[in-house]
Image 1 (spheres, rainbow, N blue to C red):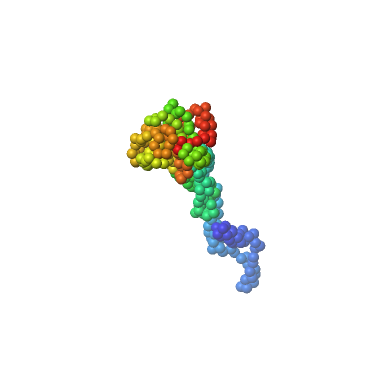
Image 2 (cartoon, rainbow, N blue to C red):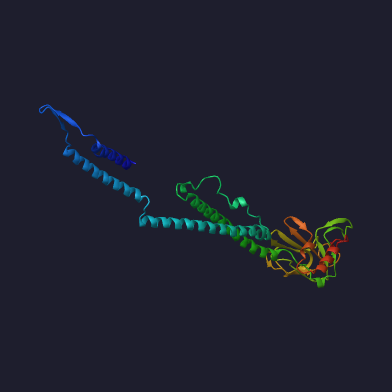
Length: 345
């Protein structure tokens, strides 16, 4: 603007000093010596000034024209920078698309994690708020304002931050799933899942879980386990992996007995044994021999009294024979267990 103003002043002054002056009327003055009018002659100095001013005016006009043209004509360096900026913009747009694709894949993995993996291993799903926590409210990307493509850059930066946080959460979740899977394998091997007496050795299942008639006192009393009738000396097996928590030799009550701690809150109890073949703190696996059927304690016939405990609650053992009974055998077991007969202890 300063150049244009200066140029205008020069042009105006030049016009006033030259063009309009040349076009002005011829002027005269009265010479008292000759008593006549004489023509006023133009000063050579004024003409020189006009020429100089016109020259500088022309120079300024040319300079101004160059400045104006430079706004439209770009240098090779400027063109190269513009191409680089366009390329960066294209790469940011491509990055945004790839981030959207990665976010979609991660979302599918999160759904499988919550609905399949964690459900199978009995773990609570991760809430959506926890996966996306820390990205609401505060404008954490204000430092990216003021650029030509601030919106594009902020969008890409935010997506990267969210994706990184979700990947960390998901990675920890998968680490937990690995631990749960290992524990699940161990848990499945530890939970009581077979009969303590082989089916071929059973005469019959003498009594099930529930109210039964006591064989000695002839009163109706709750029976906390199952009685398996079998010949004296029939092998008794551990029904799941675990560690021997208790062994006891007695002539009263449950007689000779063994208790196994299977972990995961499960324990099993074996009573009225002829003898036991394990010691306290010994580790056993499902199917290992732990003793023999007998009539020790208060018992009216050779049998095994068997209990399943979860936490502090005694459960119906009939629900823990799924590993070695066919569907028909299991149905028969349920039928016998539901009959209110006389127990053997």
